[in-house]
Image 1 (cartoon, rainbow, N blue to C red):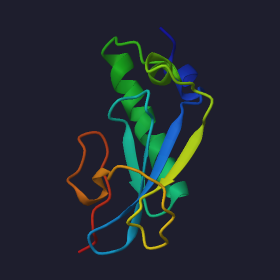
Image 2: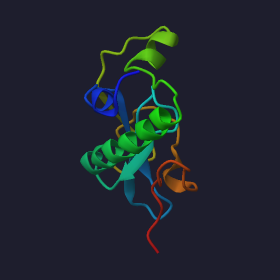
Image 3: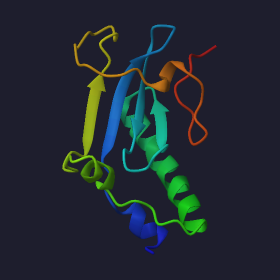
Length: 124
């Protein structure tokens, strides 16, 4: 099994999605399709990706500590018949005020927190 630093040096495909919170503000959810449940949020795409880097470290540490071989980048895409050449994809929700028109499913930005990383929550 590779060491943590070796996994951290790999470039996992990243998806960043914009979502509208219940209060009308926009949040961004970032995740790695290859690392099920490895998600983070931020007020900007950059903040979401930076938070995801921290979450990925913890996620990989836990898998390695349990003796579980973490998936390699692109394994989820290949398993579904796709490719892993895309590093970052930003999808805008059609409900976003800017109205990009891109199709995407709602993320958990307006739902409860994940066990791995908190997702966007409206500020009180």
